[in-house]
Length: 176
Image 1 (cartoon, helix red, strand yellow):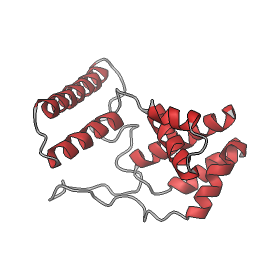
Image 2 (cartoon, helix red, strand yellow; image 1 turned 180 degrees about the horizontal axis):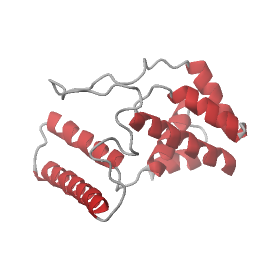
Image 3 (cartoon, one colour; image 1 turned 120 degrees about the horizontal axis):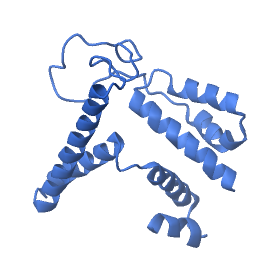
Image 4 (tube, helix red, strand yellow; image 1 turned 90 degrees about the vertical axis):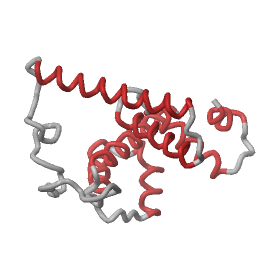
């Protein structure tokens, strides 16, 4: 993989390239071909290909793969409900009655697009940089507190991505 080559073989690469390569390697390491993040990446790839007017057989195959995987996931969830698994009547996973931020819509959105259901999205760069540098040295209690503070009010899918990033960062820092 090119990222690993950059990390291992090119000692003279600028620091920002090595840092970006390390972040990309951590991100790729967390990918799972059976989760919604994988489907989202494929959907973004299809969107990019369509923007470039590449709607041919390759794009159509990717679209069919997306639909097939979504069908599999729906079937798995239906089987869990039929087989006596935890089923909560269409409410949020985990038994809640709506999103954790308290925004429980009473009707569908009137337009397609990104809905603002998260926090303000303001991150202090210096604080984040310091947290990343010290993450592996923090005790678990402080890691949990910092992660809670960092992800407070975020959409659950973004919170999960950030938690995965810091979990992998701890693993990578422990290897050194």
